[in-house]
Image (cartoon, rainbow, N blue to C red; front, side, top):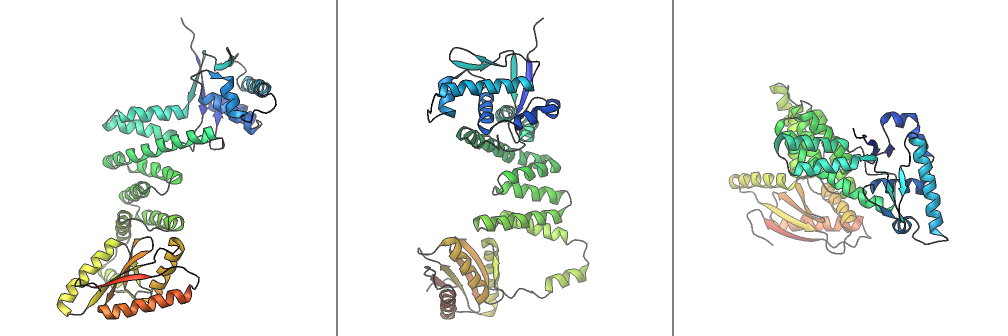
Amino acid sequence: MTDVKRTIHFGMLGAFSCGSAEEEKTGNSALLGKMGKKALSFLQYLIVNHRRHISSEELIEQFWADKGSNPYNALRNMLFKVRNLLKAMFPDQEAMLLTLSDCYAWNPEISLELDAEQMETFCLKAKRAAGEEQCRLLGQAVSLYKGDFLSGNDADWARNQRQYYQTLYLDACKTVLPLYYKKEQWMEAVNVCSQAYTVDFSIEDFTAYQMQALIALGQPEQAVEKYEAFRDKMLQEYDMPPTERIEQLHTLAVGLHKTGMDDEDIFRLVCEDEQDSHAFFCTFSTFQSIVALERRHMARSGQPSSLVIISLGREAVPTTDGRRLEKILLDKLRTGDPIARLEAGSYILMLTGADTESARLVISRIDSAFHRTYRNSGAKLTYRVAGLGGKES
């Protein structure tokens, strides 16, 4: 009969932890809390590299790179401190950390189990699997991610590992979400999206799949709230609106949220007065639809309309001057004139009922208003005008 190895679990994803949940409750967390920052990082480095022997030179290079007074003595003192800590946390376990020939290794009678390694194993297995098995493995992988790898450790070695596991986690989330969608596992999708969004909100999939799941669960109002939070954060952080995919989900959610109205309610909603007196800022796809409708109207009425592309020029500060130009366009154009962003600092707009000459006069007034309001801006507005029939001037 062979002896069974003792297995010790280490939590590396999120808050660092040692041992079982019961051992954590009975004092391990308190003991770790008393360690200095460098000693804790030293212990974590040994744990992360538990599968191999670690030389004295490697540890000195990692933790005493300045080669100050007697780094070997500092290393011996650190090992003494760490061994005492391990003895206090696991009093029934002898000689957990062994000294070999100028290197150090974990006692082979102990098996170390790391949640980060478990997540990595599930992800690698999922790449070779398909269907239900792939979905199960990815679900197990993402459930292990309780936060960034050793989030309190700012050492270079930890930051590199942190980026690796974060990328592994986000890729797993992006892969499992369409599987949950196909299987209509809406609550699982919501849970994955909620956590993944806190890691990297800018990945559109996490908002899109969460909105889709909420709509499928009959909670369109929560989908609208999710859209609004995402839109505000994208504008604040990147000065970019949501993509057409997100906008379409928002339109669907709003429509479903309005269900239950009678015919009079619907007519009143469609025909109610627009309270906003500004021009109409929309996505490029919506702008295309408005232009298509206007072209049909022109065929019946014979009334001219013009398109204008207006840009800030190379001397502009894209984010700052972009916001300034948007404000001027919204304030100075007529109510309902549609505007869409083409790229940073470049916009397209439609002037209904204006021929190309009238359009140039309008843009001249926009130019004057911009430079009168923002005298210190280096932006030089340029524009091109074309009749909606296609003639450019």
